[in-house]
Image (cartoon, rainbow, N blue to C red; front, side, top):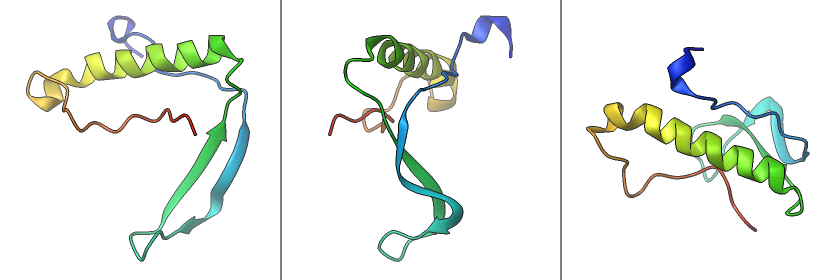
Length: 81
């Protein structure tokens, strides 16, 4: 990885839910994809902060692909549910 791109990779200690790694799953008749939901405890602030920092760095690295600004409808990978 290039030194000026920052860190966009995080090792996450978590539990998996809805794991589709052996065969892809189709949702509502759409394209079949491999996927997983990673469950991270809310008390693990260090990991959550590292993920948020990696998301911000990835957005900064991709601004040029989006014509100079981040799209308003950008879907982020972190959910609180």
